Image 1: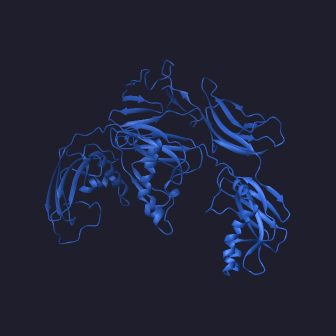
Image 2: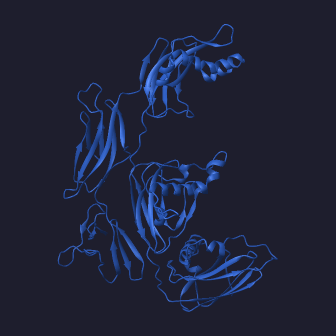
Image 3: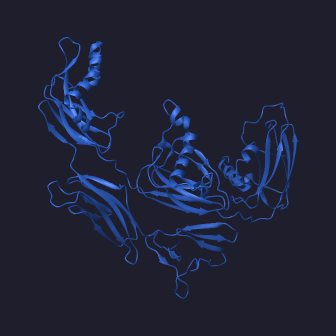
Length: 571
């Protein structure tokens, strides 16, 4: 079942391939909400509200079920950049993901060819000798649902000559095999296989300004140093080439994107005195231009569901396989300390900065580094539930996500990154957690007696039939949480998470009057003893009641090492 964009109930009987509205006895479609946005009352729901993406059903017990409105009309070009570079005659293809599309119309620049078949968009650039073509423009896929809706997906395109190819010279043959935005790769073959020669990429404008003789003098000067000090036999094997060799721009000295260069090659040999180097070939130079960086036009489809007073589920579906960060932040994160509004980029940078601070040593100080930024970011479709223990690929980057706070505005965010640098806009989905509504009436009387580093605890619930949890924790940990109920939700999560093999939550629950003790706690340390109602299926039924105590100074026995000492029931 689902709710369509107009707020009507609908059902699918074939696994979601087709949908139809549910009708009443009179054959009329059934609405989940009225036209004015007020709720439709029935025996299950106390209220129903909606926004652009979801319908929220508040049950009679106060819990909220969130149903995402079915997104039934979209078209995405997967892994497509904002502008795709082509060489003359080149064909590129892009996968298409779509839903609810009944018809498409393709538009293109003059001289280009486009086709859409079997969810693949094919784009072919014009040939170099074609007449009347446009060197750049936009390929567009206009799509329709067969009724009223239409939209468009766009891809910028530009064509230029290929920077690769073979050039024959008097002394060398240079075959440029690849040019990127940062490097050039080429195979160089000297006509005289016995000579040593130097190969490098040199900025074309600077080369032309200095002149060939000055450039050669500049480059060989650093080699002359090794000749003068008798180290040339070693360094010529590392700095020069002999025979057919492959040259690639060193990663430490990347080229500038979109710039013009010469790939130069010339031979060098020692003079008769062995004091300097002299050229023994002419300088061969092959012009090329580095490409502009291809920026992938990443899109994120984000949805939030199953919103409760302490948690939510969410999904992030990216249009490519590049890395990104995602998570839930308070809406207040978009306001600065002085009340000024923060941009999405500023919030994203602060989000990443928290990871950098948390894992600074592992990212930068370890030798070799323990983790990389790709260990902290995600790729592909992600489905997460809050609260939970977030297990990532690298165990050092695992973390616990705390419960949400009731009656609070939040934002699901997702944004692409290159390492830690923001690569895309921030996709956002706002939502609000409902209030906590107790389903049982019960108060707890907690009588705690301190004896040195030991506690004796008596729990007296007003409802003797209620099942409940009673634990203790250090005050410092307890007060890290925003309120009692956020802490209760976190305590329940970890209680279930850490259940021993063969045990269930029912084994942790108490009923009636109970006496317990805790021994060998930390001396002169604040502790909190707390209790809250809980069912066997993990639903908190009452507010949390707590008592804070301070253990006495001095200790005859070493303290317990557990962060949360276990209470032992007195039999």
